[in-house]
Image (cartoon, rainbow, N blue to C red; front, side, top):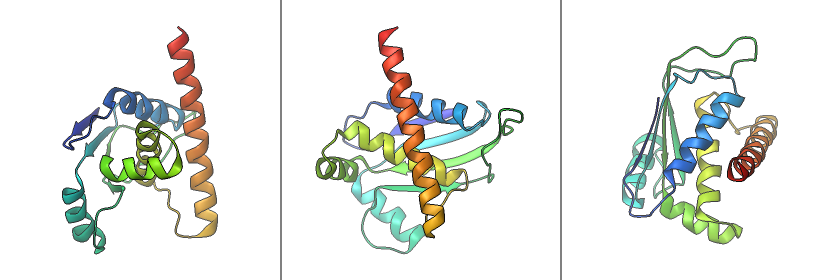
Length: 155
């Protein structure tokens, strides 16, 4: 079950984010019955969470809170159902980053949601090798999702 709650003041296409996460879980062989919550919050709420959990001042773009430490499965053995955890995204920060990057808010939200999901599944980018692996998978997932969305629109 995937629950998306937009508590921010920005209008975000939560249906697209839902399709994105469903797509990624399928590609990563995670049970469709895994539980995941995505919360979109304003800058003040994100700043509070950032200080509380990371001991860093100011808002950030995305935070992940893993629960059952689920990991990606394989085609032969899908990850069993469980509690993946929570992804918290700040659309206001995402909007600023999207402008800087020259793409849409939705594209930035998809990037941040994918990034948060990979953190829930045990990926990290603290070390150079980890960063290369995580960011390559992130690009691959987003590319595959974009292709799936083009096919969906044509159907």
